Length: 376
Ligand SMILES: *Cc1c(COP(=O)(O)O)cnc(C)c1O
Image 1 (tube, rainbow, N blue to C red):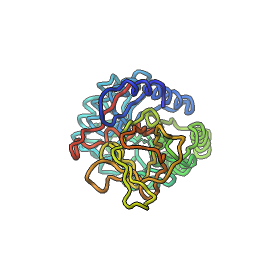
Image 2: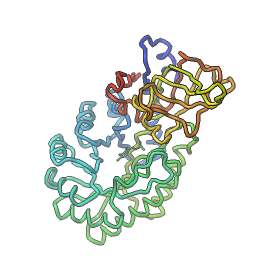
Image 3: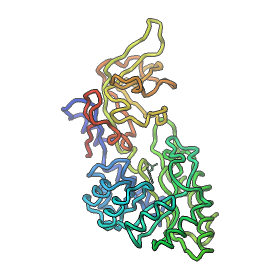
């Protein structure tokens, strides 16, 4: 909780849950990445939070951008960034979207199969392509699994195919899984990346860049290593697998840049017991899975929840959202300790909620409006 957010919430007059993001924290996070990973360009993964104020700030401080769609491309350009600072990192694009991005000046695209490389070759001739390799995502709280990336051994074929189609094979990318707790997770991916570099070099195709992806954590309930530990482990793995011939590197943090910059203020709507002797209370908030807390699916992300009674004795609670859908339960398998003195009408603060919340909110399920966001 920053002083600026506390002051903002104190003077807030409207009702309903809201997310407040402090731009000072986003700026600090950006500077921290620049410090911990020097010589590595930061591409903000726009999907984490595309608020115009955040994009504008990051454009001003010199950040680059990882976009996944045409609308995100437009948002980044509207924030004042030039197209040479954009990487179109989604490996699943319509050909006409590639063509339009190319028309807007984007010339860096990710692919993970030959068919996608062919689309880029037709729609954005001469562009640079990065081939995404698969990572298993173990150690991550929000793994990105098998949906993306080719088998590393296939990457050189895809890049050679791209080369023959007139594209510029530029490098390798991977994502070790979001909210990655294991700082060693990059080691295996970098071993694979180095093997692809060697294989391409043997075919006369020099690669120049490794995109280290995202995965850098925000601090939720579970403790995480510091960003410095990630930086050190990544540098060590780069040295180990590339020796003195270090490639250029970029990172694409989403959560790590904005997660801890935002706090959601919500309200307790109801506290219920299902029987008189029940020890577990049901606590219903005015926000749930459908209005911003989608990453509680599978109880993956466990947000710190603060109340004004935090020094009091606690007891286990099941926390749920307000909608008429039984999926809308946040924490049940592992009940959440909340103060016994918590009362209906109390405000609660959901911390580290700056990433993957506002845009995950439904447009009006059960009549509730999308999560309101203030960027201060
Ligand atoms: C979502 C995404 C990111 C950001 O991941 P975080 O774990 O939030 O840092 C980076 N790169 C790509 C390609 C992504 O899809």
